[in-house]
Image (cartoon, rainbow, N blue to C red; front, top):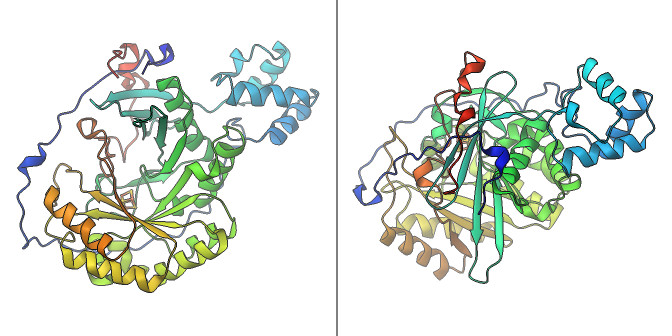
Length: 414
Ligand code: SF4
């Protein structure tokens, strides 16, 4: 894999991995519970009216016409944004200088952010920290996978919020608090930044980075449209993940997308779920399962149930059997994705032993539940699932000079 020269400004910083063997199993672990009320999905205005990225070809044609240009200039804008991935209006060399100047003077901009830091894990997973216009930082992760037959997949794990208000007990992002929703272009640009690092097309997008996508559904849907129609990533290659926000799964279903809905269960019953996902108190398990059924009925897309295995908490065979029962009652059209917990600093939780994971899988499979275990990627870059966090999550950077890594070359070790 080659790193693009355009990213030569970023810093490679390996972060120590936590030895998995250190995990000690204990069945008596108790996790303090807290009440987290789910905020209403945001109704703030989405899509900065002076940002080009995220706009459709039609909208770009309208921009051109509004500036007294012929509409084909909008097509050119589209090409420059999504094919050539040009970051500054001044560099739109296909366009007349007068048009570029007019756009610039009217306050228009492309809407791409600076890479503040890049971290590469030993397995090639790359985490980028993008510095947004208000100096807040957001993380995005690129996960390259080459299968046995030599086919290559590049997954972008994108964030939908700066931080997250839901505070799931095992999640590093939740511990860092919430700052704000991302706008559509701030989601789309994450995918373009990953393409730039890897110098390859992103094949899959998962909304599993920082934030709860359903709390920012309008921007997520706008970004989804752009990623599908403009960046040309198939809807089936896009997964929207949620821990559950009342009334939003139904809303998503009404759009009849051909994308996968991934619902983070993490427990086979309401009581245990509330200890792991505090916001579950506002959205009971049976209501979530019903909404997932409606999603399947509306879209004919199977639902993926995500289950983070926490040693001594929810990883026993009896939990697996209870989960199987829950899913059998629910019906067909699902898949279970098990995620062995990734250790994070300051967490009471521990990673399950491999033996426990295998026993959990066997129990589910014995009940004919299709199951996969997510391969842990990027542990040494703190980029694995649940580990997206940084010291700037809540507060913006203080000064532009904080983009200190911009001078350093990223080694071609990635
Ligand atoms: S797991 Fe997802 S929803 Fe829960 S706190 Fe973390 S980012 Fe938020």
